[in-house]
Length: 223
Image (cartoon, rainbow, N blue to C red; front, side, top):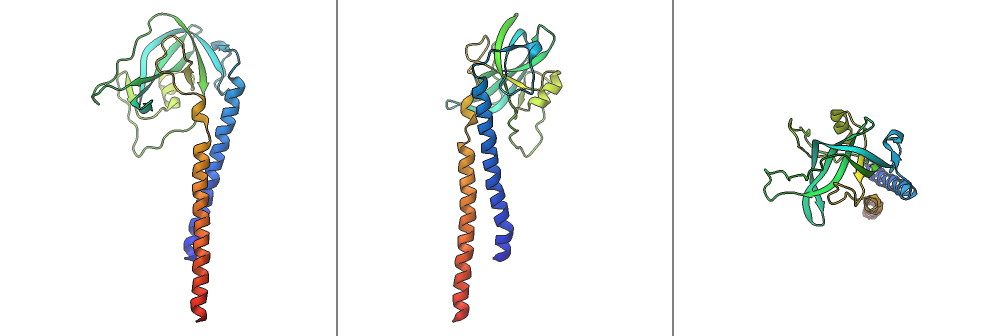
């Protein structure tokens, strides 16, 4: 029992501390978002991909290269995030998240992405990288477009398309936007605080059980 506690207790405490750290990161993201919420969008030539939540104004054309990020849920419907290449008039390339598109009834069918031909001006927000959902196997991408993918791997997408390594989420009301991707609500740290409380609760339970067992064994040895 002592060996079990010595091995498991640090693991549980480490997981709890990690969840608190993740919660602090989410609060920092939320602070950055609120600070830049009312800022004016910069032009593509002034865009810095390292500035989180920077608003950017794009002027150019959407291209056919499209990623459909699978297994998304919005308002109780399953579907895809639609990420599409955007060629800016100044020569740079961006990957814009046009938002959510519901999936067809049949799994073997892909949704029809509404086209947006011609030159347009769009305003979006540079969404920070928040980590990838872990998967057991590699995520092979089909050779043709559109590509149905299992994870929003923006770095891999940008490398393939020679684009800026950042997701630009279109703001509501922009030309070509579908059901807009979420903004502030995904920054809440409540989930991480809940996980941390669970791990620390397990640590307390483990210690309490160890103490109780030790006291009981001591009493039995005194008999």
